[in-house]
Image 1: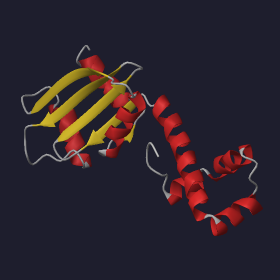
Image 2: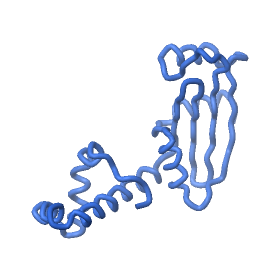
Image 3: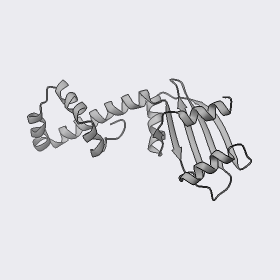
Image 4: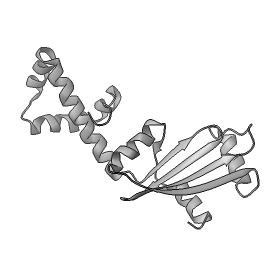
Length: 157
């Protein structure tokens, strides 16, 4: 397995897609129920293959990720060749970007000495999707890129 298995909740959300996946292998509901009971290792393999297919599609289409911690916000933008990163850091230890108040403070203080903003660029190695997945595993979430693009424009990147 290249990535991680989808959670039970994710699989439930993708029930129709999973049914279609099984159908492409000529496995109907009755046969799937039989496989789960008589060959659980085969059922596990099917779930793993399906999970990897879903992840591969999501990661291929991923353009932006965001990761929030107490004093940092990491914004990631991707193209086929590289990762662009914008890191926003509060120099005031009592500011918490995980709260609405912390984000409001950032909005007010973004151009002050209390906020440090850095940016960088890194070429992908051999496996773009695996690198994007590794960032997600560290706590980043998929994003629409609005915040990333706002900072990119402000910083004239």
